[in-house]
Image (cartoon, rainbow, N blue to C red; front, side):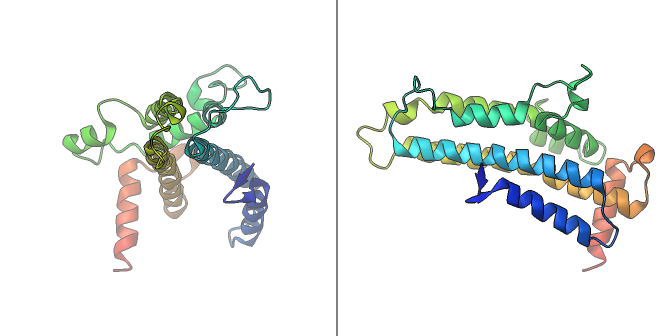
Length: 216
């Protein structure tokens, strides 16, 4: 699969090269996890935009053709995985991208530093980020059939535009754990916290604020 017209394997090579250049030294565990997460993440995003291309064409594919694969199914499969770890434990300890997003949200829990009214807006009730992303896949799957039933008299293909907007929104949600992990683990390194004594969300936010104000 490609991402931005380049093979995803090219990005894995870049990650390895950047790791070797780090002043802190090469970390094989971090490198392998980064390659795994980013490769799957890019594959999910590319699958979503493949859906936009398919919809924009306005031509219904032959679903009975053995070579046809629904790009939404591909993206969802890559994101969800089997929802289980190899030892049968909880979702949070599995290796799926879904679990990674869940763990990022848990590490970056905001409840202790944000007012209740802000929490309600961000969380939209009790829906987690992982669930919002899953709901996004369902919305795309529901919209896809309309790409071929409502475009006959519409050269602009409004459905494809709706599809692109939904894919853009879903991609924005997928970017959130990238930022969460960047800030969280930067705080872990900066504060010298060990893995069994990681900083709280408040510590993380405080560290980011203090760091930013040093450059103001």
